[in-house]
Image 1: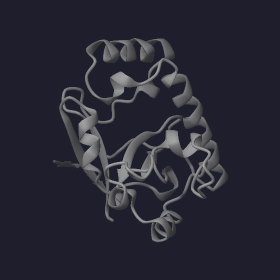
Image 2: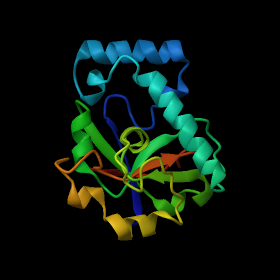
Image 3: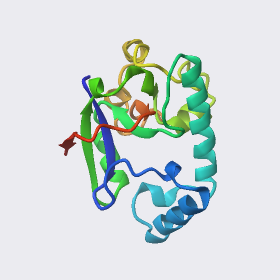
Image 4: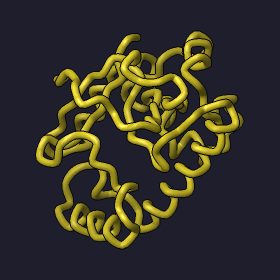
Length: 178
């Protein structure tokens, strides 16, 4: 797998991150999203941003403990490999693809599944509450497969993709992927 994918709404553009906003501003954006009642984000619970900030801080700590060197306090999000289902999260979903090689290995971490279920579902699976490095993730994929392949429709649990936490600013050049 040579590319990381970022999914977003065409009307807002890529790498717009709620976590980059002050809490009050982020809450205002979430209120607007909920009022529009379109897309996946409009169904997020009232405490979503508080939980998200806590999970991001935890992921950052775990990554640093493994030798990661994050620049950003909060990550941008991508997937390891494509996951067309994520296009449905947005009213005008689109995606970009960026080669893995465009990122510093010490500035990207991975969770087997979305950060939320990975850190919050306590079902005994070995990849729960884990953050992986670029060096580690191929072994995890060999052991468990790509969720995009074995669970594309979500019938077998919350793992539908491998999430990438990007702890640096993304490159300014990338390919649009549809």
